[in-house]
Length: 356
Image 1 (cartoon, rainbow, N blue to C red):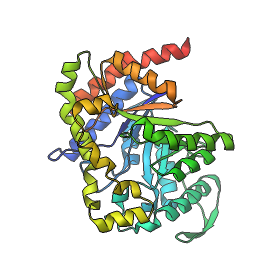
Image 2 (tube, helix red, strand yellow):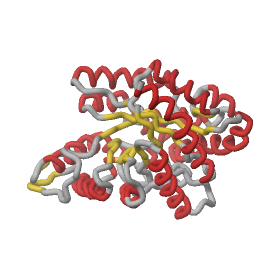
Image 3 (cartoon, rainbow, N blue to C red):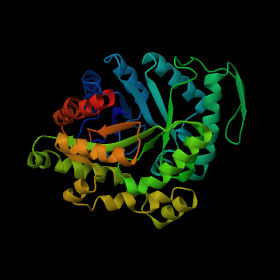
Image 4 (tube, rainbow, N blue to C red):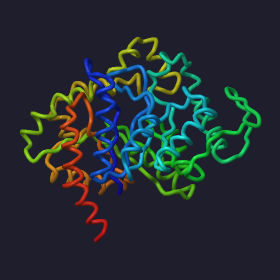
């Protein structure tokens, strides 16, 4: 099992955007030094509390110059909002600048991104599907053509070419069954959303694993959970409670832009019903004890978190556990503390077991 870190770059009101970006860079460098396998960052725009990660490829190109071994993953590109012919070259260049350490998530993205990006919601899935085909052709063919509803190109050559052949490892994620089915058929890895309990994920993960088995692919599940560690439970609560509440509130905050009944009806009609369900908003009503007890976050001593991971692995074979160490406006030093404790007290338990 791999161990990674996932960041949304949530930015509390009043936090300087440049300060947040440089903190993330230092946290990536620390993650490389202490032995994490991969650092994932979302691609997201328009909503500061949720994320200011508007250019993850630039972030990773900078981080690659400060690190030696950790891999980098975009989790994930909102493909319908990109020009796929241009994106193919941008990803290839980032693969070069990271010395072949890049991985890419490709998805439809969050529903709330479409209105500020001036993109009709109903175009999300067909644009997504066309974009995937274009990217794969751009990376594997010297010259390609494509004739779709939204993109029509003839004899296009995309440069530069990625270092990794045929292209960087691909992942996807989301809440719809069709996404998990497609990922399994193509042999892609999948991210599971960081806030949903395993019971909600069990059905779509079965769809994914069944599709992998039918197509002859090995499943690769990236399980994401916020984590905070200390040797004292009472100290943990003092240090993380506010940030944990903020994490849930910041994740739900873009939903305010979807609150009208007209928007909700459109979401349900156009394949984004999850965003009209109130699921994210309901999480903001949970108490600290409920968040911890329901394992929405793995919050506790290293020994407790080891048990939680072991329990997870007993019911689901995952390829990577990606911890969220920077969330809800938490202080930089607390992020570094959790990364250090996880790397020195949790990861070795599983590494030694795997080697025995």
